[in-house]
Length: 245
Image 1: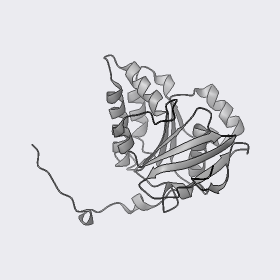
Image 2 (image 1 turned 120 degrees about the vertical axis):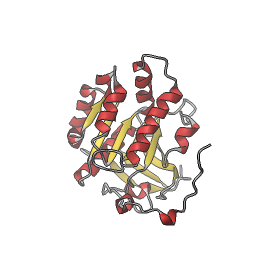
Image 3 (image 1 turned 135 degrees about the vertical axis):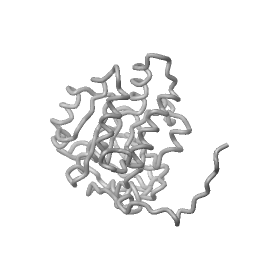
Image 4 (image 1 turned 120 degrees about the horizontal axis):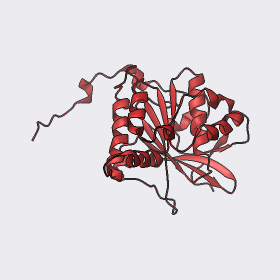
């Protein structure tokens, strides 16, 4: 058995940039952390039914962060370039977001992602975890289990959180994950435990909202309502109590 080492956090020196929030300038900043912004080296999962607005919200976040000087990346395993063009017509700022269309690299998706991640990014969106996992399994010359595919993605998160890239950036990840027909989280317990926060996007009675069920960095736990009718931005319309229907 290897030596077990106990750690005292008072004896560890962290890069001060780890504790500087990245802000979009919108109300969603209040939800990411008690510092009112997305924190570096964090991993947030967003769940929601198809059509609830998950991809649009996360692209909007990337666009606003990019406007504020952050280096952002969108990894899409669900859309192709034609699909993305439709988004850009409604949200022109999305057209400036560097995007890796993973379907273009069906034979070697792992190598494609790892090569791009090596550049170093402040914030990366992965859409979606399940689709990336399927691409990894499909590209493997040998049988690859879902657990193995999940481990590959979790390793990406851990390495980039810790700044193991050319720019030494402690990357924050926003990840879309599917839910079951019963509304339950689809994924392993390890996946849930390895993430900083769990957010949920809902569409009920034509009202869209975001709320967090877990967030190790604090942040507001009310529901943030929004709409997609505004041009070039998500229209946040204010908070309501999580218990208010």
